[in-house]
Image (cartoon, rainbow, N blue to C red; front, side):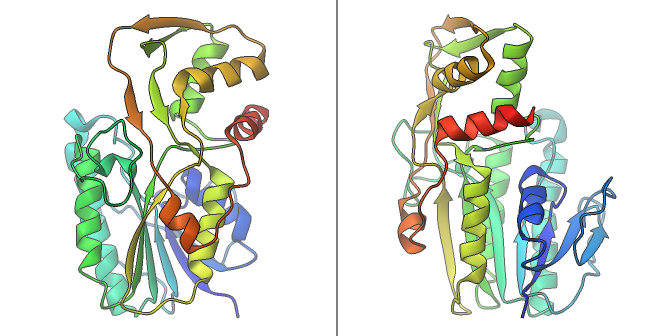
Length: 291
């Protein structure tokens, strides 16, 4: 029998990728902020603006909730702090209350590596939690809220690190690709920029599948870093892009300190015996083919 899934943020990069992969395997009830331009071929499309709705009328008999929805203004916390809080905290609380009353079995929440205190060390789930943005703080607040519901359903909190892949828009790799294509100057701290552990979208989708299909006890709450297994600087990502696009990058180095957002996914890969299928080189090449 197919499992019934409810996905918030279905119109986003991760949500749409999940739907395209699994719309035949699962019965997917997908929540969109605005009506999608094309038919998704899923069980049901639900139009719901989390920033405006507090009482949620949603389908019953849902096995698993995948809560992906978040504020679109996470980069502009000075002007949209209220939207970030409404989407990341208040809407999460409302969805948790609905899930409790609907006897949902599993609740999956996508958080972020930005909940950790910035460090040049590889971050583990036991690393200090000290976000330095409203976005990170709101995600950590949502995590704390979600854990209060562990007696009602199984919970998995996924702290994502630099998701990327084909057809992605308005994120780090698409942005530097656009600068490269436009022959714009790319500014990098100490000629390196930030160090990352990017996770390719299909690897992330495969991880979702393993978590959904796992038979877990009802009173369980786990937190996992979801990151790639390669540490790479923004400069090295840029050079891979440059090689495939055959465009010489214009790089300006600054004396700013190099930053890090690097996570260890060891806990998750050992728990689910997960093997990464996509190298950064291959993933970036696949992204380039989609532009």
